[in-house]
Image (cartoon, rainbow, N blue to C red; front, side, top):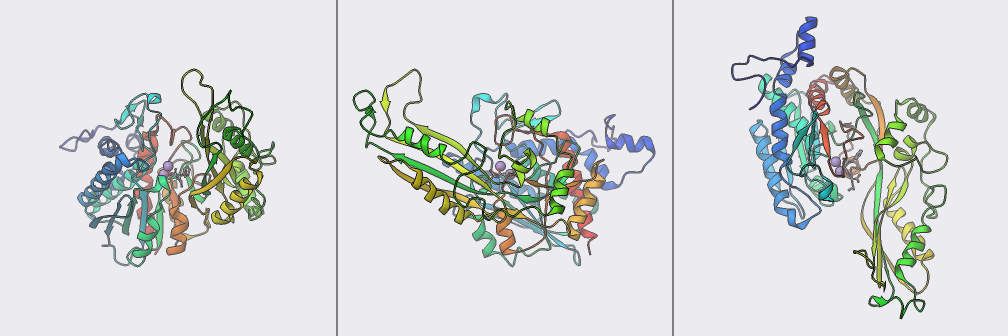
Length: 484
Ligand code: BES
Ligand code: MN
Ligand code: MN
């Protein structure tokens, strides 16, 4: 307990806190807000404890850590007063389930988040170790700080605040925190189908997305889907001397380069036949709304560190990253990549290629078209295999729903600027599954920032986002209760 509140509740606010401003202006603060203000420091300590568990879902060596993280979150949910807390085994990493159903006559929210994280590599680029959360300049650095443990903890701390202040939640709540989001949520669909009835709700709530700027809250109404593939090219049965055999047989690395070069044209368009056929054009209203967004393109490109903006011709950066599909090599390997030189004609080359998809592209159809295209453009003299590693359909929901109105009100209360509706470029595979199993309105209320270094070394969460997010979701539960 390192909160400023102290044991006897004599609270000395930081000079810049909202509490101080309110006190100064003579505006009384409600008990919930006061609790959130008073326990900020401990909320950070609680998050740190979760961030110390290296729950890397992609790596077999971290299987136990994933199980430990699930148990840790489950224990925490129990300590908050949630009932029926379970750690549910799956064919992969466990799912954490909890509920609190004491708000009779009030709506039921289904909260989704993920406790798994991306691998932290390359380790040498971290300023402080990825699983030793460290505060620097009002930011907390660790793998998972914002994606997604930090955002899960916003909800856990909001639940705590309601329970401590009122002894209850304003709405009924079901919580699903999974451990395989970063590897495609392959086993979650079965869990959702098996428990369809138990998971019935009025609204889905997810905090795993971003804001449009540090003081510009946003509600996300669209996410891109994904089709993630691997291309494998085999030539000779073994590596060969590149002098003795060079010139006699096709080099698979050269062949792979030719294939990759044939996937995109000079103007940034994917060349897979039919790739754009199902892309739904924006309506005039959607285009107008997108154009009106206060998107900081310069800052966004600067944050990337790339020399210039580049992408599909005829579209701007915001369109390219949200409402247009893409095709990208995520990695490629072949032959000798060690120190110095080795003269070798490799027997094998491979690349991981992903496509981000938008409505109404269908991942299965896109994979088929992609595989056929790769096979068609593959040069002779090598054998080529294309694997479907994982996929998820795109997600789009309407902003015109009373539940989203409630989320708007919550964000308006917590921030100075009112929220905007955005579509985002990332994917959350479960969103499309939820549409199929539950077909509920979905609130994507996220607090990431462009410079959070998500999936990259030195991932962080800004404390402004953490505390602002916690307050936002605490208010969200109140506002959801007002929808009936
Ligand atoms: N939280 C992200 C998704 C996200 C990122 C939404 C940026 C909005 C903006 C999520 O954890 C993620 O990284 N998803 C993966 C899914 C993939 C592994 C199927 C992604 O988008 O790469
Ligand atoms: Mn995430
Ligand atoms: Mn992620």
